[in-house]
Image (cartoon, rainbow, N blue to C red):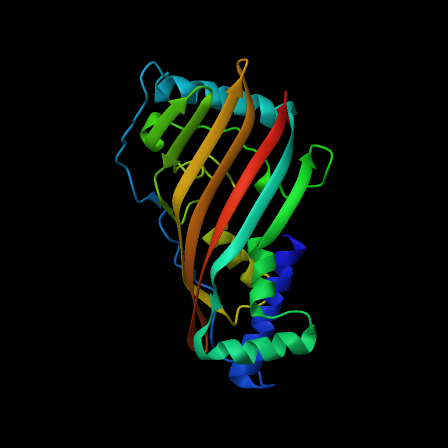
Length: 262
């Protein structure tokens, strides 16, 4: 478990404890019984559009999957990841109180910044494999299928496509999004993080929707030189800690792998 996840979980649970019960103890809430959301693609219609004389989507994806496997195994590249809030984290009327509690622990932090660490809000720049990089951010050996594509265009060595939306993806490769990347948070990661600290907080539900998933790939001399993708996501979480607490938020992410060598 990452240090940022531990910081996020412990701070939020401490805040909820103080907010709901003052200095008292949690009593009778019970064990965590998560409601595991189904993993699904929310868009399945494939509309493949190609310009005249461009190779088809199926042929390109076979090439793309084979080449990303080579890059992931032994390639090098510059990684840039930018993530920013579209709608900052909101827990309703508890927001100001939580900000006050978090600020008392660290006067340079608030709810947005603490959760932002967890989500990776900000800019990450690294060079793989020399730098220590979050494994979820690294280029993945993709396993995309033609039916994953909502649109596809090819133009003089630049390939652009969009993927089906995904709700609550897992890192199993069962959805188009998870066949592209591991750069997302799962329900199980949230549940496991909270369970490691207390049984007084139950995760009733989490829903994360990933959409507007756009990918651009550049090829020169039969090799991939650049890959970039972007996506939007919105999330809701429902926790039970004596009373039910709901939180929402939304963000956008852009990732690029440039100067690829393999």
